[in-house]
Amino acid sequence: MTSDSTMLRLLGLAAFTSMASMRVCDPMLVALSHEFHVTTGDASAVVAAFAVAYGVLQLVYGPLGDRWGKAQVTTLAAGACALFSAATALAPGFAVLVAARAGMGATAAGIIPLAMAWIGDQVPYERRQETLARLMGATVTGMMAGQWFGGFATETLGWRAAFAVLSLLFLTAAVLLWRHLRAAAAAAAAQGGPAPAKPPFSLAAYLGGTAALLRMPRVRWVLAVVAIEGALAFGTLAFVPARMVSGYGLSAAAAGGAMVLYGVGGLAYSLLARRWLALLGEQGLALTGSALIATGLVLLAWSPQVGWAVLGCFTAGLGFYMLHNTLQVQATQMAPQARGTAVTLFACLLFLGQSTGVLLVAFSVDRGWLPAVFTAAALGVLVLGGLVSRRVQGRVAAAPA
Image 1 (tube, rainbow, N blue to C red):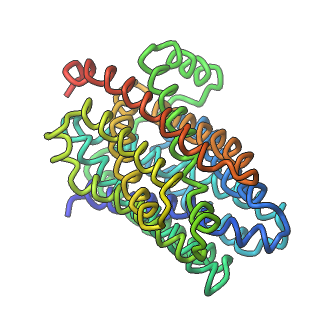
Image 2: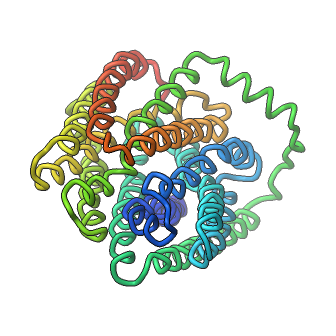
């Protein structure tokens, strides 16, 4: 096994745990509202706090990854995640729980986007969609595991057990990455001289570089689209288990199990990404993905039987990853000269969009408006998919190999 292959597997482990930690609270919202005597909408602060911190801290991790090494920063972030996951498991009250979840988001922010940027550095463009899909396989599996285990733990072991397990997984990923990086550094030192010195960090240079990125029309377009995608798709995703519980009478564990099918849909895409791309192209992936997301949301909003709602979870998951992976590829290529900063800006806007979506949907959930909100999100996704399809078609041929 090559060093790059090993690194990709270890980054996949860290990304798996990061995504599991992101989605683990989704099936807990009703139980948390009962334990801490808040509404389900108020309990969603544990989701929004993670998303806001995750998004904002991208502005820090991008330049850190470009300067100190993307894999190195990811290793430190995984270690910090282990600490905050343990703090979440021990939270004595709701305010502390929300603060600890914000800490988890702030530290998890340095994992998946920098892993994407590392792939952008190491993998040629023509193989990047497939390689990113492999990383996506790890993140999708993590999402499935987090949603299922969050519900299972809530019903059996207690919700705190879920965060204790996450802490152990983060620690394992951090230790394995650290050992691999030490071995790689030792091998590099044995073959050549010391690494060239890097210029000192300059806040002015960072702000100037970020401003230069934002002046690029291609960058602004990708960032705007992913923010809207985050609000429409991820913002509604957090409330699908609540819809399953309140609309169909499922338990938290059963709702978490149903949400696994969202991840199964994403996994179906990631495993067959090369075939999907060959069949549909990037334009077709955007159109088909948005149509599937919209179909899934409408089924979740209006289906009279739980079976159709469960099918909606799978359909929405398959569609989301078709659309999102297309945008991820664009993010890795929109500014190759500052890929770490560019990709983390992409993640920043995704999760700021998600947090905005969560806050808007939280306002509706306590008022019984979820079906209408899901329907509005479905219409928005259809429009978004059409816009993305028109723009990526012109980029594919021009993209450098």
